[in-house]
Length: 272
Image (cartoon, rainbow, N blue to C red; front, side, top):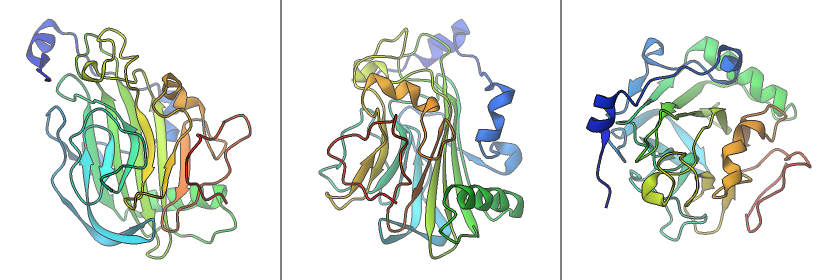
């Protein structure tokens, strides 16, 4: 059973917000209250309210009109995800979701979870430029985006000020849809309730990054998921930009992974 030690740690001054290094800022799309983001409550294993989308987002050929941003590193479509120890994909219960970094986040101990739906032309132009750069053979002009950011979030049971910063961006032109995952700073892989070390945030059952379609058949695991190697996800990519992974989400496809990055076995992948 999980018991919060947030008050004790806060009184001891053990949790300190840390901004990521300036030189890596271009990897992340703008986020935070100044961008009009909503912020999740400070709650271990908490989630956002149900977010109704202005336009449908197509994920594995199915349209969704609402989603949840879950503190534990998941954007889910049908239901909230409070589970803190990740399971391997495909999930037997058929939950469709995007897992940029599914692990035991505790934002009471440190960090914030932000999200917003946007049609800001400056951001959409930047996203369009990125997609066209990575996938030049697929005509695409973003008309909508949803940006969820986990900003220097702590892990459950932490006795340090380690934090992870990562981001999931969903975008569409109403016909094609894409998901961009950005990994800015990853310092831990596992919470204490998942058998991780409270002092290091390592060991136990490490974080899972990937996609579950919800049909018990189609899924994708980013290489290193649920192994100690996931801490190096800031150095890997399928579009030759360290820390960035890009996927076509409507009819799910993955741009080619560089030869030095091994594919995870037992994934039902569709490669461009």
